[in-house]
Image (cartoon, rainbow, N blue to C red; front, side):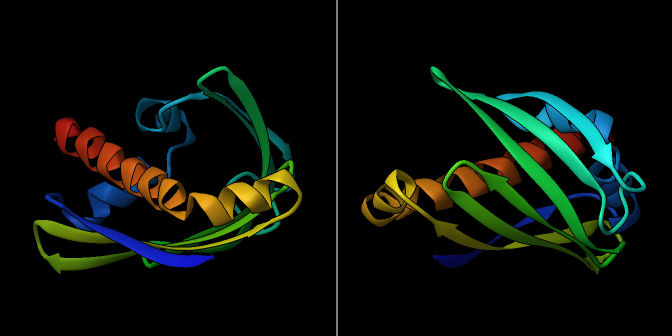
Length: 145
């Protein structure tokens, strides 16, 4: 499953990148994020691995992030792997004007086992969750100004 989501943020691109690129901010806009732990590689750089733990309802989900591209302020991309799910996310940022930034994500999901059934039956849930993170980041970022 592949799809793209995007949102306009009413901040200059430099401020958006500063907020996005700080791992301490992740729990302030990623609903359910319980912990973020660096595992290997140079933090924030391609090849670096981190463990993210999310609480989603009654379920605890652990995923491993592997950074694949870091070309900020233009792109930050990674692979996110959890039980039965492989997810590639390409985050791109574009200055619309001096006070606005377009934040876009290109998502690709590959699922196995039970998660393949969930993905087939409820593709909208994945798109909705991706959009929720964009909206939550926008709200967090704009409140920092």
